[in-house]
Image (cartoon, rainbow, N blue to C red; front, side, top):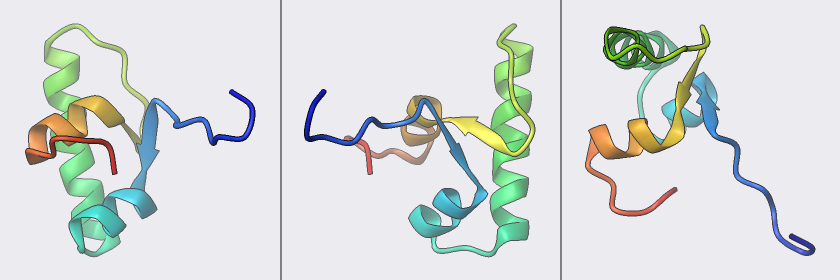
Length: 65
């Protein structure tokens, strides 16, 4: 992938804030809710991160931001 940036599988609080236009506290709350859904589905999650594809799907975004 020469000349292009690699997109991470997970996004952090600052990127959630940027996409949603919300505070860090709200972003952490959203990420916690999404990670709880993933855990119930048997997925492994990371505190302070959320799966990019799952997040984008849940907010109704058609393409990655």
